[in-house]
View 1 (cartoon, rainbow, N blue to C red):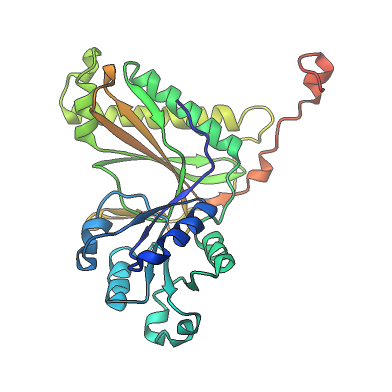
View 2 (cartoon, rainbow, N blue to C red):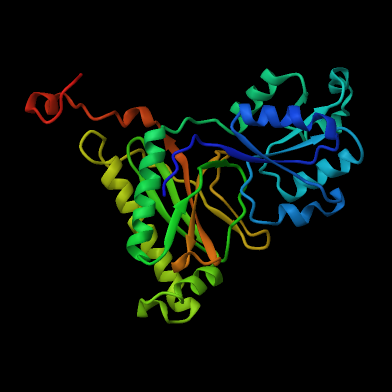
Length: 318
């Protein structure tokens, strides 16, 4: 099943004022955000931030131990935009200079336009055509079904994410090079979960050890996704595979389990849920990320000029 919902982003809030949560939720909904609220002790934030939660930003408010909390957040996840909600508008000017640089924006709960502008600046920097989203979801699900025909597969709504955390134990990368976008396609998965689900299927190729089965599957899926991307977006009506010769280093921090592509561009993220046959409870996910960090100009991928089809009688206008 494919869902072509508008792109959203997932944000985490440590806001301590329960009375503003309904208004905060309204703001999140209006700006295509899915909100998660921490209800635990802020001193153990590493338990939340170390998890594989695909986040676009973090929100805090200036009450309680907010200074130490904000410093700790930036130490653990410096790549995530951090926004501070002040209880009173006048308090924005009272934030100490040594603290102000930790935040990507300060706002009062009634400053909805300011919040929207922050989000456009820090998360929704790019517009991804919905037709592009639909194509990616479609060919990705078909590719997974081709590799694992017995599996039940569906996609979650796409996300814009800013975090660099690596999901699972294995990552596959392949360059995406066209003359309207350049960057990388990345796949990640939990090897043990995927191996357990593959083991419930009839294909004898899935009977080996984790290291024998999972890496080839992820590698082949990466090839299938890139091949499908080229088939869809480099076909007639789109432009050829080429582009400027630009490269940047890719940095992998094994200790922090994160990967950086040398820029500050949000990633377009898809999650595909794979369930074992028979609709039983076991499931896993494959995380697919597109990082167009080198070049991005989707307007060059013009819509196919269908006038020839009209003249041929293949389609008609009405």
